[in-house]
Image (cartoon, rainbow, N blue to C red; front, side, top):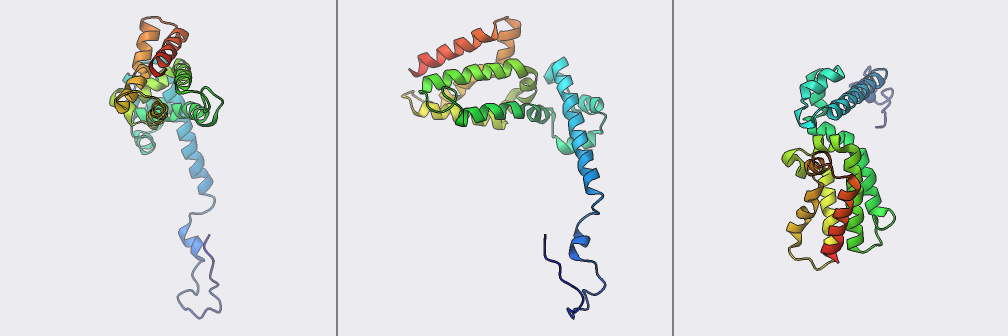
Length: 216
């Protein structure tokens, strides 16, 4: 907070009779908690409503109007906080992805540092399949079409896999990174798991086998 100049005895006529500076710049104290509480409550309602809609419907069919109506908020309120449905799904998925990211950074091997690239890539595949299996409806909402490549999580996964490839002799590293991440696209997992009926552990095991064969 800025220091408050005492108006009395300053000799500055412009300061006499004026309120302290912070009273001019800040809202009334009793207004702040109510505004923050309203915003937080609306955010919780929006996220809870979106979670239900993504879970019960094809996430690609859920609209901002659907979410606003289910949450009981106006569209203007919704758009001020979220530019689109994908950003809402990203917010819901964010905490789960952050937990996995932290394990990749400083967790125990083979998921974390300390194991060889083939083992780390295999462990990453297994962890990602588990994430998709638990939160597929959110991943589908967050990574539809080209929006997948714009998410911060995809950028993190790409940097992680690229770092693993730097320690190997694979050719054309840049194009290979996205090829290795392609099997983790939510649409691919949905097709394998729910249309072909392949169990999640088999999908994870096959990707781990692929990692070992490619990088060893």
